[in-house]
Every structure is written in C-alpha cells, then in structure tokens.
Length: 115
Image 1 (cartoon, rainbow, N blue to C red):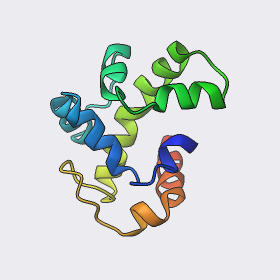
Image 2: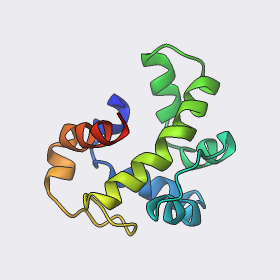
Image 3: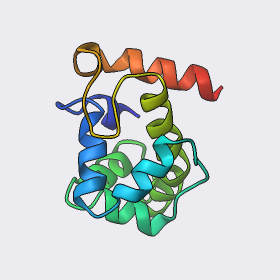
Image 4: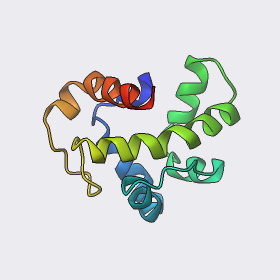
C-alpha cells in the first residue's frame, strides 16, 4: 500500500496506468461496484511499465507472483472505493486536492471500509 499511496500523482496514476494498458473496461466495472478479484494477467497488464510490482516485491519481500495475486484482490476494491468516496472519477478527475496531497487519508478511508 505504501507504493500506491506514495506515488507522486496520487491514486489517479493507477487509473491512468490501467487505462493506458488497455484495461479501461475493467476500471469502469470496478468503479461501478463489480469488485470480484481481477486476474493476475490483468494486474500484470495494468501495472506494465510502472515498476510497481517489483518495488512492492522488494519492499515486503514477497515474490512478484504473490504481490500480483494480492493486488488482483485489492485493486478492484480500491478503485470502487475511491470512486464511491468521491476522491476520483473514472476519468481520473481528482475531486479533492487532498487526494494528491494527503494520500494517507484515502488509504485510511479504504482500509476502514474493507475492515
């Protein structure tokens, strides 16, 4: 989660990366509430070119496969939560300046909902 929340562009970069990598329909489904786990292939494709998986795997330390399988569960829930909570739209329009300046607030909000 640290890698996600510490990105310089806030959570919006996640939407951009997945859309840029051909997963616009997946992002839209997750945003609308279809939060069943994604596939590992979707995670590989969505995070392609971001170095995020390797960074997380080194930090935790876990294998890239384990990181991908965990993100496959987490990302759909996070996307839905951030849209539902009004932090970001599916077009990656940040709704609150705090979505970039205080990402911990978004993370805490998501974890409260999940737990």
